[in-house]
Length: 156
Image (tube, rainbow, N blue to C red; front, side, top):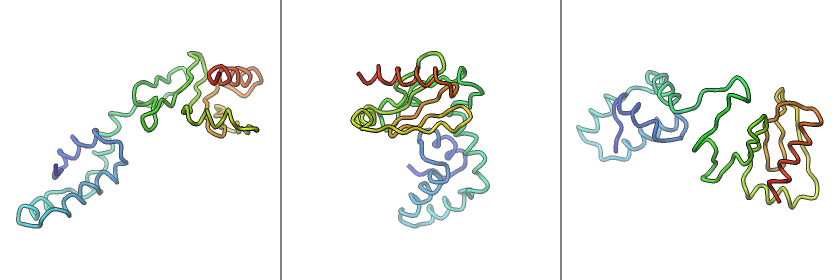
């Protein structure tokens, strides 16, 4: 399949998760790999430059991406937004204020570790473990106790 016009680019971009510039370049590479003839030349002449179509491509792509939330309570991750490389990535959503992201493989590494280190320097207290990320509502002791309890319960 060769994408040749801006409208074709727009209709095709939502089916892929590649970055927009990579998507555009991949479509051009497909044309370069074709046998060159008069049809190919006409196709190339009709292709818009990336600069002229990038705004439309980004706008089209943004229609498939959830809007950024203003608060933790507004975050609603469903379907592919809960996965990474086909595995479940959002492992714990306590339904209140804590989201814990990891994979089962990463948690197996985490549970085998003899030491754990964390970083809670972000405004919303984004906790980073060796193999785990969590979105926490604060940096107080009760929040961290709840975080570790949820993680411990999940790993058992």
